[in-house]
Length: 628
Image (tube, rainbow, N blue to C red):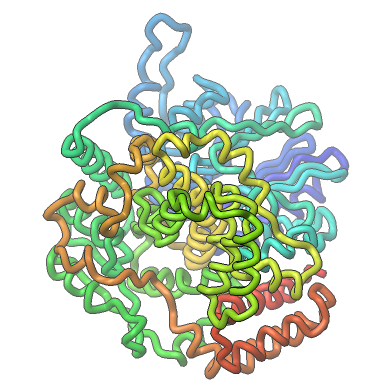
C-alpha cells in the first residue's frame, strides 16, 4: 500500500519536474513512510511513497524498473493472486511466442510489470486485487495507467495546457504547483444533495478521478480512457443451480476471498462492529488462520450508539484478541483536527473510519480486513427493500399523475419529518423507474429545500444510460440497485473515505466482499433469492452456522458516532464558525446555510445532523486547502 505520483510535461525543466514530484511525494508521505523514490527522463517524472506489506526488503522499493530499464512502474495497492500469476509468467506460453519471465524479487509489484510486458493493456484482466498503477515506456514515451474494478485504490488526474499530472490524492496535485485550482461550482449542488461528488468529477475544478474498472493511456500528447470491467455486465444469471448449491458457491468464493486477503508480511487484524458483515469476515478469518485474529471495535458512553456487546460476543465465539476502543467526546475532540486534516476530499462520513483506523494502527497493526461491500452486494440497506416495494407498487403506477402530484404537494406542505417529506417527493416523481427513485433515495434534501440553499439543482439524469442497460423488469431489480450503489455510495463515499482516512495513519484496509469473482456471481442471482425478508438472507444462509442468530436478527445500527449530541454540545462552537464562514463565502443563497444551522439547533425534525456536518466539513476543507 503506497502513494503514486506522475507528471508528463514538456514545458517543465528537469529541475522543475524534480521539484514538483518531490513536493507531491512529500504530500503523500503519510501513505508510505517506509521509502520514497523518484524517476525522471525527457519531460516525464514519477514518484512513489511505500508502505511495506509484502516482501519488506528494499527489493520492493519503487519506481520499479524492467531488467532493460525500458519500462518504469509505480504501483499502489495489493495483488491478491500474484503467486498464481507469477507461476503463469514463469512458464513458456504454449502455442505463443511468450517467453518465461525471470523474477528477481518476491514482490507483487514485479508481477504487475511482468504481466504488462506479456499481455500489454490486457494485463488488467488477469489481476485480482486493489490497485492503481502506471507503467511508462521510455522508448515510445507512452504511459499506461489502470485502476482496480471497484476503485478501492484512488487515482486522480489533471490534464491541461501544462501537461498531465496524476496522484493517489487530490492534495498532492494541489501541492505540485502545476497550476492554481479553484472550487468546481458545477458540482456544489450535487455535493450539498449527496454529501459527495460522483466520479469522474471532484470538488476541485480541473481534477478528475479515473473511473473504477478503467485504464488510461497517455500518448502523443493525448489522454484516452477505456473500461475493462463494469458490474452491470454481470446482472444476468450465469448458471442455474439450486438454492443450496448457490449458497455453497457463495461460501466457497467468500472463504477464498478472505484467504487471499490474509497474505501479508506484517501484523494484521479486522474491524469488528458486531454486525453481520464484519462478524462473517472475522469468522472466516478464524477458520483459515493459524493464529488468533486481532479484532477492533469502537464503543461509546452513549449506549444507544455502542455495538460493543455484540462485538464482544463475536470475539468470544472465535477466540480473537479483542481490542475495545472507548471513545468519549473529549477523545473525539482531540482527534478531530487531525482527522479533518487527513481528509483528501470533503464528505460527510470519513471521521468514523479515521478513529478506528488510528486505534488499530496504534495497536501495532498494519493491515486490517473490513466488512465494506456486504450491504451493497447482498441488499443489506433498507434502501433495497424500499426501492423493490416501490417498483412493484401497482397502485402508485396506475394512479393519475395529477392526483399523485397534488397529494404530494399537500403532504409536503404539512410534513413535519424527513420521512414524510420523502414520501411527498416520491409522489411528485414523473415515474417510478430507478432513474427517478434511486437518486431520491440517497438525497439529503428535497428539491425544494435544495433550491433554497443553492442555485443549481442536482439531478439524476446520469443514471439513465446505466439503468436502461439493466434487466430490471426480468427479476434483477436488486442487482440493478447493487450496481447503482457500487457506482455511487460505495465508490464515492465508503471506499474514498476508507482509503483517505486509513492511509492517513498508514493502515491498509482490505475488503473481502469486493472480490470481483464473488461480485460477478452474486450480481447474476435473481431477486427471488435476494429479497430481504430477513437481513441479507442469501448471505447468512450461505454461511449458516458460522455466526449466531442474535447477530443476524438484531436491529441494524451501522458504525455511526453520536453526531447529533456532539454537534449541539462539544462541537457547537466549531460548527457555528464553519457555517458562518461558509455563509459569507458567497457560494450559497443568502442566509440559507445559517438558517439550516439554526433549525438544527432548534431541533427541527426535518434537519438531521447529516444535513449540517458535510457543510461544516466542506468549509473547513476549502480553507485548509486554499481553494477559492
